[in-house]
Length: 168
Image 1 (cartoon, one colour):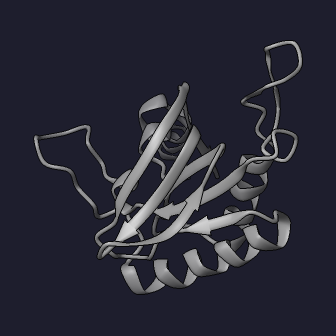
Image 2: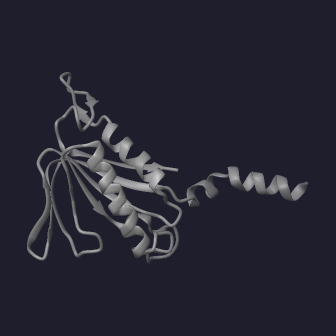
């Protein structure tokens, strides 16, 4: 009985919750953004959202769809009153999705990031591609980088307005 109480306490502790991995997106409101690989532009938007997407070992297509839905509905664009009241569609913006495994790094200890929580590349590529297809089915203007490429990301941040979104 004592062991069970200790386990429940651990699961509810803030330290344990901070170690749990969520699918992550770093979203930036931009006036324009593009991804260049080997001198060629692979994705480009004007006003909209640049989304860096981090995939962890436990992530699934369902979690990813939930995150994409949240990104598309997240109200961070100025409405007619100058408040953050419009989502991407209402702002008539574009969506630029870029895979970024470094978002999943554990950085609490030491001076070197630990990428162990990131999904292995072969699995992450498949999931990323499925999420791109899902995003394209939900929104018309979706552009992307190239998975695992050496990408040069150019952007003009609007605000700056940057948020980290997570889903369980």
